[in-house]
Amino acid sequence: MSASQFGRCTFLTLALACWGAAPARAIDTRRADVKSFIDDVSERDSIGKRQLRKLLAKANSQPAIIEAMDRPAEKAKPWFEYRPIFLTERRIQEGTDFWLAHRRELDQASVRSGVAPEYIAAIVGVETFYGRMTGSYRVLDALSTLAFDYPARAKFFRDELEQFILLTRDTGLDPLTVKGSYAGAMGAPQFMPSNYRRFAVDANADGHIDLWNSWWDVCASVGNYLKEHGWNAGEPVLSEATVAADQSADLDGHKLALSDTVASLQAKGVQFDTSLSPDSPVMLIAADEPETVRWRVGYNNFYVITRYNHSALYAMAVYELASAVKQRILAHDAATAGVATNRPGAPP
Image (cartoon, rainbow, N blue to C red; front, side, top):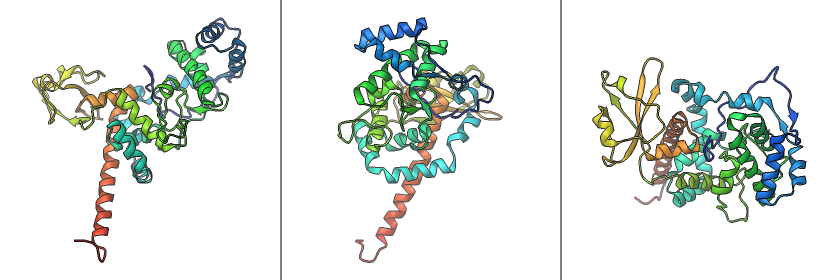
């Protein structure tokens, strides 16, 4: 998930069964940490303390949310188990249908951001199955639970809770009814509140940003997010690589950082084809298969995708889904052009 540091929440562990889990309970606004939050937000954002107390008193802490946070698929699964979640025939075909239905929106977003349309479509496909699974938790409950009952990430989620309060104040969204993921991510692209406020785009110029129902806004916002995080238009994302068996033990393919260059990685015995210059930053990726390791090289744009969700598995899933959907679109366009050419009276 990738908002600021935690970010964008995917639906990898949605709807975990919680039989026997403790019931939800209301947030106690008399708690010292809750009172401190109210004081700070009131002073910083000129919101009345009474208004904040009234809002937070309606928030429920849900143990199921904490359980989901502790079991993300990006950490729990190797690549060969993670990949089949997203690279299914259904998701590829629905991605193709989505592209055909929203071609204008994708094309406009691509022109504005420099991000190829297949990557915008694939991110929406991975995040919410093209907008069909945008979350069933009240965002207020999710963020309040994690802000006050999840110490490991309390500061991050208190910041996001504050951003959510500001977002609803500024946009007129009802803070008691907005729903999202277990981590508080919203809409078809699953933006955390801070990212919604910072990167979301009113692409159709109707005066408000709607990440649930406006595909103009959704596509443009995903493209803008990637652009603002350093996407380089026209550059590759990923290459397949080979490594000699006697050299693989010395290589680490699990660091999420552009810590090598094309030249330095090739000097270590990693073989791959690229059109980029020798000094271009890269990262080595070890994709675990049942009996071996599949080596890959990620470029700047691969790293940018991991800013959306801080996981190489996630970025590889986006890359493969994008590639598969684009292949279907090219085949569709070729077939359509062929039919048009063969029509009686068509120009030669």
